[in-house]
Image (cartoon, rainbow, N blue to C red; front, side, top):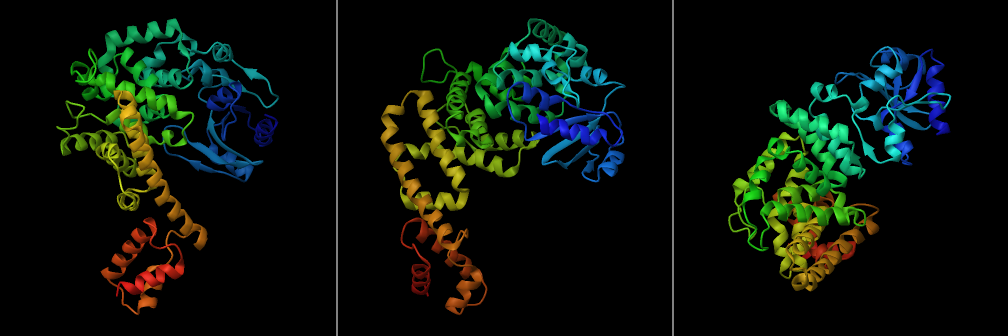
Length: 429
């Protein structure tokens, strides 16, 4: 805390008052160390502040220009006050737990009882003000994802106000741009995906951002009496959420998105009707949500490929997959297969196969890691130029083919040193 206050004092030496605000104060109150601190400064001229400080750059994108930089070893982002006073600024924030400020002398400004709500694990609209929702209905989704992520209850008045608003103005949710939906959905799925989707369902929001998911409520899963395909998706997300705190790979966005989209566009769990149309739906939604294309490709690869891990997979096959889809995508595929098997109740019958496949994959990954250890970080023993020099060849497609073949030889254990790589290459010509 002391270092953060020093940053405030350093800014105030320029003649402008400053406060810690928003996520920074909320995290400090929760005992979490923020990596970047958020500040409010009593001026709109961030360029002037940057000139006085001699550090930082102004990001003028968006409605509120931000000064971003580093000072006293602390990364910060600063915004101008919204309103005449810090109290005015805090009143513009949507949730009480985000409407707290800390002055440079360590004093706290908390006009809406945000610290009390943090201690009591309650999510509340700032000042119980439903006008905040009227100004931006997406704040409903933000409220739900905070409640999910921090495992908090929604204050009864805020819940009542939001439900009353949706009863009358639900159609306004259709006016929210897809990329804004996507930004909040991705944040909501990142830590507590099962709880987040449950809350969205409880407030009848799913039809507005993923109507195909809503449709799956009426389709039996064909495996468990009284359970729909929608229930199946929730169970997969529940298992993923359970394991998130113990398995680092579970926090990969592609993993959670695969859980949400695994049967979107289909009507059965056996995959018999899975088509390119289903993949098109995944790509369509995630593109509109502004998800990076690499993650979209990983999601589709996981969904289309996880069932193969219920049968024995050779090291050669794993090597090909790792080279084509990356190490993370293949590891995630096996983990995802485990989650689905657990959700559908057949884990005991495939556990040994999955563990054997995991062992085979580990051998392949270990061999690729060994290359990095021997070459000080390179993913290959030789570059294309070195191959041409060794074999006295000219540039061309054949060089790429040799490098790809060498990758396979490394991954399957046929080559484990630079000398062995050279011998293997010589044997190919």
